[in-house]
Amino acid sequence: MARDEAPHALLDSSDFPSIAAARRLSSERIAIARNALQDAAEPGLDVVGFGSLARREMTSESDFDYLVLAMQLPQRPDVAPTLLRRADDLRRAWLVDEGHSDEAVRPPGPSGIFGRSVGAFDLVDKIGLQDDTNHSMTRRMLLLEESVSLMSPNVHAAVVTSALRRYLDAGRTSPTKVPRFLLNDVVRYWRTISVDYQAKVRDSADASGLRYLKLLITRKTLFAGTLTSLLLCGLEGWHPADADSLTQQCMMTPLERLVQIHPLAPPRIQDALTDLLSIVDYFLERSGDKAWRAIVQQGERGGGCPEFDDMRRRADDLQAHLETIFFEWETIRARALRCLVF
Image 1 (spheres, rainbow, N blue to C red):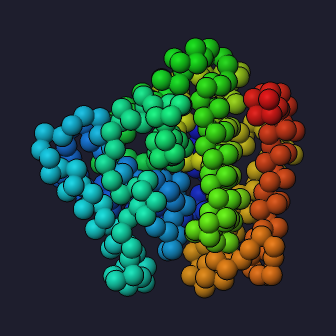
Image 2: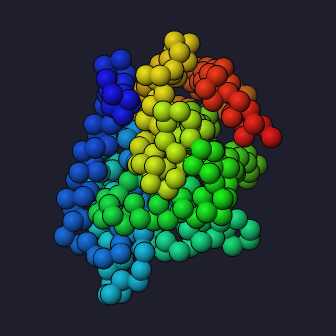
């Protein structure tokens, strides 16, 4: 099996039925969205999907997050609003098909991150300092870590490549080295969402048990997948730290980026990967169950909810598997310690 085929083969295997099912559903939804939006294509614009759709982790309970991404001003002022309406129509139809009442479907993007138009310049040019707001950093990181084009792949790829080139040029990154400027921003985003969760606990704003479990499992594996791509840069047999190679990595899902090491990793690391995938698989199975979601929504870190406590223990196991992968695999151990600790 070729190395570039390994992530798909492993994730689509019968060993991980919920991951495979989520990947199929996500691919079906992506195809539906592209078909629905193709006649509205406008030069310099794309509709970009995020979240579980982009990660290929969709279940029957998943929402659909999206942005209209603009590389240039559209020729007609009604184009972006029309694309947003079409995307929202898709979102509403999918949620209703999964059993939600039309009245219960909330407007997109209550956080202000999604469901709107954004310019590529604001994502690419404002990295760091005061102008790089929480929203701009989040959109940029999610564009790189978990996004999929739903209309104009060339626009999506061009913005991703432009963002990566900005990091590499500013950091004067050698093709054989870890792109530290980019890695530091990835780490910053992971720490930010962790801190923001705690702030929501303090303010009692959307700090449910389910959100906490997503942080420990979904968001952590997203972070780990991106770290894998960056720590492998320039190592023998792997991709260089250049914009084109890293764009190819960004077009992979987080789990694909993480498990690409499986064919070349020693048995202990392979076992850690497959055990980690089993936890993700179980979490996807459970998170597609409306009754289970309602139960763990009430879970708290202090315990008292068996379903929540069970998944919390599995999240602890996932953490241990990640520590094995990043700190016991000699290929990346030294880089992980140097780049992630100090």
